[in-house]
Length: 355
Image 1: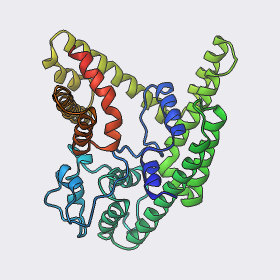
Image 2: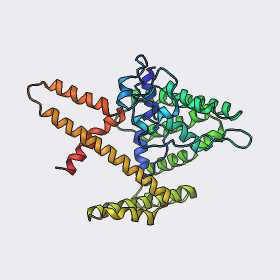
Image 3: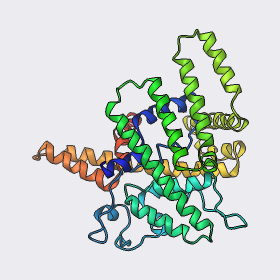
Image 4: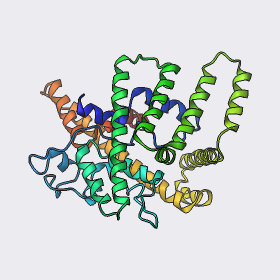
């Protein structure tokens, strides 16, 4: 199997999973969970060139001081473009007896580092994680190393399944395909990970997946509108209290977003900070400010890209192919593979805002 393709699938998953994620994001009031097939990376697989010590990719990503021929550290990782304005998500914890604490924080920690795939090779990322794990005391250290190996094995097996299915996938995804993919995912989790780990890592995901699948089945059935509404209401009442509370938080966030948009429209953007402090917790305010910063950074980069396109297109006496190459070179220097997929829509949105 093509190794790069496996890594890409580890990051962005199977189109079927993307389709289903889109469905349950809409069906579940825009809830974002840590999807198994999407490790929240903006980069596909393209390992750094280690032959020259510091690759051009590394230089473009702000890694001029890092020698990739030596062992990288977590501090080096945080200099990557992937983690701009970010801090480490999740953590490694041990109990009083030195055992590894297996919870969603641990999964977030693993997925956080894996999201750097594309700027670093998978092997380099694993080496950094192993270095962090080596700081733990026994037996937690050995437990963490074994769990990491099994988690990567699970991700790889899932990617291989997705690649096989992608070859025969039609444009229209059937409910049967969605159900088969979810069943296979559950099966692989339990083949590679013990029951306690599956429970801690994926319990919430599987509840949301099952809920969304059943809700989608209701909506695509031949039931009457009243019957669909009744069955949907019954389904929602069966959700765990944790997810019901989660839905309420999402509804609150959506309401806050609408109020912020209204303030901006009225020229009262300076009142947004006060609105947030009155509506959500200080921790949530801090997260929103981080998101704002990331959004402004992305917008600035898109504006620079759009200006570059205009500059290139205004050139005279050069071929269309040369212009395309200049644009592609700019993309390679300033954007990751997943970011490139977002560029056309981002440029169109920018143009719509500034006709």
